[in-house]
Length: 120
Image (cartoon, rainbow, N blue to C red; front, side, top):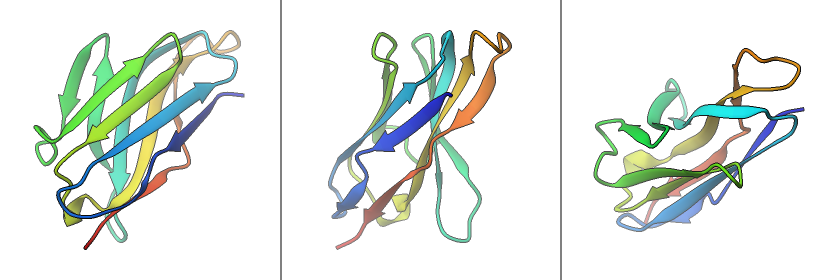
């Protein structure tokens, strides 16, 4: 049973910072691309950032403010968020492309999400 669990969300004032974490567990053989997505009420789920073999990609709206990183040994994914704006308010979801012993072809998994609220 592969699971992705996010943590670190909360309430922060504009200009503040938060660091999100995502822990992967279960019958994992190898993790390929990992990423963060976010969804605000009434809006679609959008890409925030991805990371693959050290290569990172960011949405234009967060570039220069957010930083994605991962620790493969610990099966952890992180998102450092600085200079937060009210428009960053959303549920943030962890995403990972994972291959298991039972399923060698990688599949996409999602976490349950963590709420980030930027407000004064």
